Length: 91
Figure 1 (cartoon, helix red, strand yellow):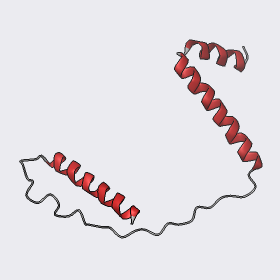
Figure 2 (figure 1 turned 45 degrees about the horizontal axis):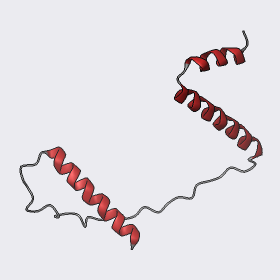
Figure 3 (figure 1 turned 90 degrees about the vertical axis):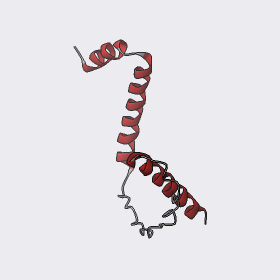
Figure 4 (figure 1 turned 135 degrees about the horizontal axis):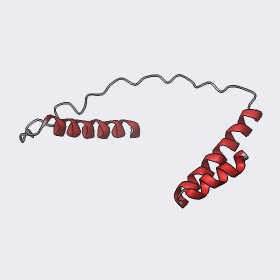
């Protein structure tokens, strides 16, 4: 049995959604093999200068200690840090 017929048999047993994923993966493999053939230079990522930490969110929860658990505190702090990061990117 050839690999093509084996792939075909296995593909037919999959649900439609997974069959589409298989087709997308095959397209990705074609793209990957074509770009490897045409790529003559290796792209190098430029190092990114790290930004200093901003603790503008520190103290923002003062007075809000409503008997929260440690996990709930972590979520609130994370939300504040994300909001602070979004503000600093718009400046």
